[in-house]
Image 1 (cartoon, rainbow, N blue to C red):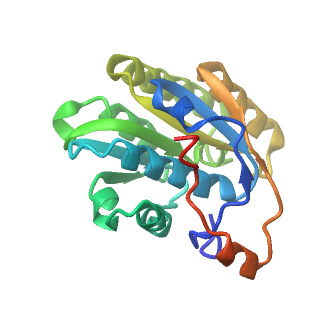
Image 2 (tube, helix red, strand yellow):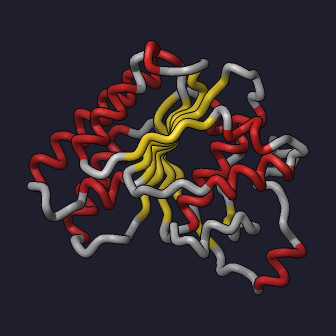
Length: 219
């Protein structure tokens, strides 16, 4: 997600599922192309925490692409008449720059002694690009991803925890290896949601039509 895309403007996306789909525990794989997938993940996290506004509910982002956009969370809070602190104080970021760090962060999510509050949502981003890194042997990356997903599924089932996994299609020069990573993610996911994005409207249209991600009917 580039700095220009982290603007919090209206998201040009057609969501093929109701918001309640992501309330259920399990591994939900969200597939799509472009930086806007990261924006969508942030906004879904914001929607979930604002809809489950108990003070002990927290969300975590396991970030393998070093992308965090607080602007999106702040805008979603304000769109729902909430103070930005209400969501920022309950969102925890864990960044990984190697596949081994990502695996360790996933394992730590299962340790309740390391957490503040009750974890109610887990967002995983950057897996395809991180695990497609040509500096790591393909077999090593595939094996570690299998173990990581096994950990995440165990945590999700033990705590009935919704886990949203962002799988961006593209962003790497090794299409064959990326396909392998996406296949592993598909095999572990309880459901896979393909998201289609439309072309963004002109800037003045985006400003005029800015709105929350989900309507009241969907919520």
